Length: 205
Image 1 (cartoon, helix red, strand yellow):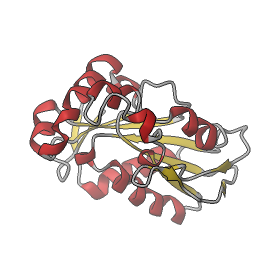
Image 2 (cartoon, rainbow, N blue to C red):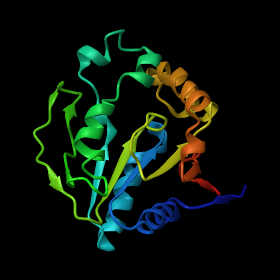
Image 3 (cartoon, rainbow, N blue to C red):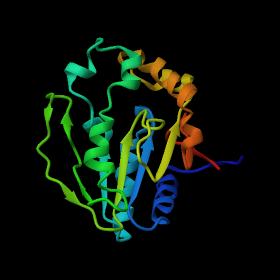
């Protein structure tokens, strides 16, 4: 095992190179807790991929949550439900990942559910070309059986997560601990990024 410190810009380059090396449509998860900023990484990588001629759709997993009546059935601060029941994995497969498969229609919906208003988004579908890319960004994504071609895991230790998460989100800490202990996201990732200090990441090869 080799640990290589990289700059945030170099990390974007690493992700872009990983994705761009794959022919055809590519479904990539950028998975990490909020302090690691997986969505920002996805958006930066998308800019570079588009300059290389790869049409890229960034999908925020936060736009594929279940309705509040289901998501919050056991309260607003249940860590087990946060891990297992918040993400609408079925909707994500149906609207994004299955259509973006090499043999899929290519017709993907970037956003499904607005958790703030608890209503459906009114987005139009996007048609991905045969070499299009989906960058799915969010937390707790791996180990769910989602059909993915590549995965990047932004790993943060429990101590670092406790230090960087806002106090109002500390109720989620047991979920992240279970995620690491039970689903072993680092073992499923094509690229593991040590992100205890997100401005000074390191790549584990």
